[in-house]
Image 1: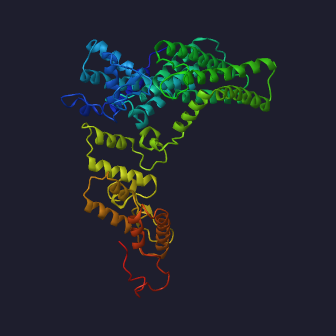
Image 2 (image 1 turned 135 degrees about the vertical axis):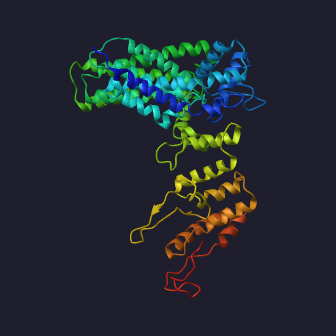
Image 3 (image 1 turned 120 degrees about the horizontal axis):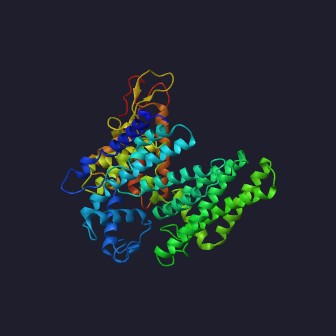
Length: 514
């Protein structure tokens, strides 16, 4: 094979681009006297957890006396990423490094993992076609891939994506036609074991593999065998490895626990169920001795899904753990509204993860370049944009307040969004105490939110309906919401759609409500 410079220059350019994208926070991380971690407060806790592990603190790495002080609490996250940080710090700085030394070692670790992710995506793209480095170039610059791997963001999210991509690559390698080598299944078992030691929600990594194997079984019955065998061997092997490692390194009683957090018996049972389902489909394929129709293949998949699922649900501890996992998956608890990872990437208004993480850092860390006033303003604007009612103060400063075209029949001018309700996000933030402004400016924000209406009869009627709903709420909460009842009573009713307004002036000369 002749040498081609493009085979070397293209990968080198993609890796350099990926590294440059992730090193943009260099001045923030290493610009001061001490290493500063970026993002939210999770990297700081990973460093603290690694330090407790190295110094032999009581309960490390499974329990922290500082959580829920003075009683202490169990740490819900598996410790693989903290073990990487602690091992790297011990290798560089000795047995008992200081916190600053551990932070200095942990800061570049996400960049290295993110570059490994770019290489894995390139290999996966080559397996699926000829788009390997094209896909890798997208991963090199996309914020969803670059922000978790930024310099100084020492969190386990980038490790989760690396292990998931490795699992996809091994599954595709084992599912290739005419391949009977056992190494993809063995490597997949190891990667899935490491994934559960990195994140307790790694059962979600099994879902794309199961869906792909099921679709392969339905669409191409002859070529689905290697993929099913790889999935069955990888999942069952991972269950054995995970059970052995949890019994050796896990907390006491972890194998008998059905808890969603940490790593334990629930995760082993989910791996066994996934591997058993794939093995059952293989057994049904070999029993029929001839290609089957699509309805029969659907029945085979239904049986292979129902039997392991029923076995899981029959055990009370596993059933309660699965219910807790569904609560987290569906974000059914209001607590998840405060977590950036549970916010949708698409259809979320401005959707700026960088702003959200910077705001959370500004409120709890001196390392953020965002001021508290800017933070509270951006939170109100982002929240209002997601609900379709951004505050009036966002119209001139926030990207979420882009102009909206006038309805058909109006002039070609554009106008900014206005508050759709007297109770806008800005006024709620002020009344809740998160706004750093003075009481007078809070009152002004509330008045501006109330007055963001024009004097057209249609909007007046809409405003009256909104006020009527608040009046009903005031009646239901008469004893505890007297101030809200007074505000509702002070708002005017709808304007009559007559040629003349209430004051006798014509609509052309009636003043606009500002």
